[in-house]
Length: 314
Image 1 (cartoon, helix red, strand yellow):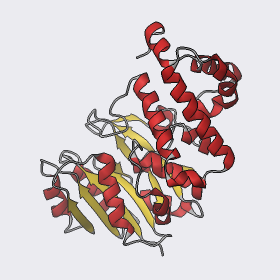
Image 2 (cartoon, helix red, strand yellow; image 1 turned 90 degrees about the vertical axis):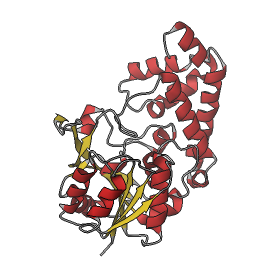
Image 3 (cartoon, one colour; image 1 turned 120 degrees about the horizontal axis):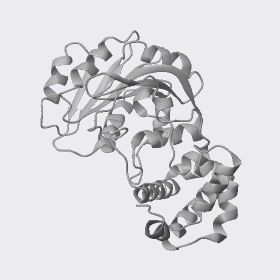
Image 4 (spheres, one colour; image 1 turned 180 degrees about the vertical axis):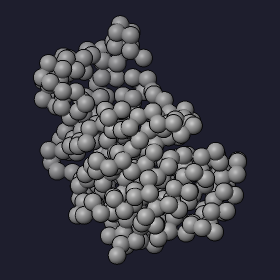
């Protein structure tokens, strides 16, 4: 039977952490061990973890100073990797959510020959009140994205709702510096290697409270999102994963990087319009209908400087 490891990163999480740990205690399929990395908390997070180590198979690693969300998870994954075989399983955990009791059991049953599966979630606020019955519906998250769509910076997997095979860590680690968030990178690695799939079950209560490290904590400007997507694409291009892409995927990624670089440098890009029309369903996977795709392609031929100066974009 495969082992299941939960990887948890904490940072000043004392307000919600006990509820999270209680939900791990309630799992119908308990984890074999839990790697918890505290990212330099100044509150009682480490003390809470130590108290729960009497009830949960916690391995606690307290970092002396804050390194950031992605780095903390990367450290936790490195620690877990040494204790797992390729067919063992990893579940990512955030400090402020509440897992449904059957989360591990459901996802373990459905992963089969895939590298990763991800469920849905109920959405709760800071006080635990339900504000949406489906995170996927609330945020209009598609169940499926192609590798090409993932290469542009889109993602449809939230790490705390996922379960993946430990063998994937051979491609995941080390996480490239230019990758914005760890679960986005894990999803792409899974899509390229063994595939990933959605599960309709709601597996957690996903808390949005305005102080989330990532996720529903707030948005970025249009320009910032474009810069992040370009940074992501370049990080993928420079990573060892690039060699695992097929030739069509490599050609698309190279073209996307060239297009995005040009969009930051030029006011208008009419020569890019045919490429944008051909690839709009990858660049705008959330858009449906021919007219909508043509409209987005036309706007895509407008440079960043022009859009911010004359079209009100920020």
